[in-house]
Image (cartoon, rainbow, N blue to C red):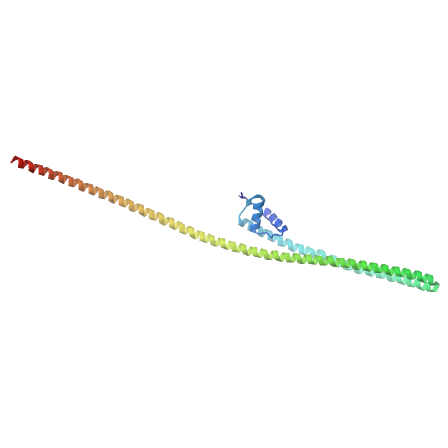
Length: 259
């Protein structure tokens, strides 16, 4: 059974990171369900909303810092590669020009010295040319690999930007929903206060009616007591009158007998 417990901001921040790793952007219902599933703990929506807002600020700062670090890392690397590649080609060309001059000299000597020397120089020149071609092809392959890596990094950067835009839009939507919930909660609190006032007023009217009924009952009881007392007195008076009349009748009868 779920139990109420205090959940610290640090725990809520960690839960936000774990949900983000699961490709689920944190919000109040997801964080509440996370702790309910994990250990059955719950806390107020106000605490969750405040902690999630703090985490969103931290997350935004981290995203901005990561993008900045990526630019700082890639830009010097590309510039350094370009300088090294240009420098390597320049050195290689200087070396090959020097080799060609040497071979040209050897070729001239071979012409002057004989066709065997010329053939040997041509072979060496061909070998040097093939070596240059191989190094040039290797440099082109390396440049192509670096371009592909740069393209992949650019694609990753664009993906991160797109994800960040989606998350920002979700964040704005969550904030709008949160604001709407807070507005609905405020309206319900106002309605509840009105109902509470009406209930209090109804109870007061009920108590007032009860007091009036009690007062009327007391007045009615007193009136009945007075009526009964009056009836009793009347009956006593009538009884006395009857007794007097009976006495007078008996006296009148006795007098008639005596005559």
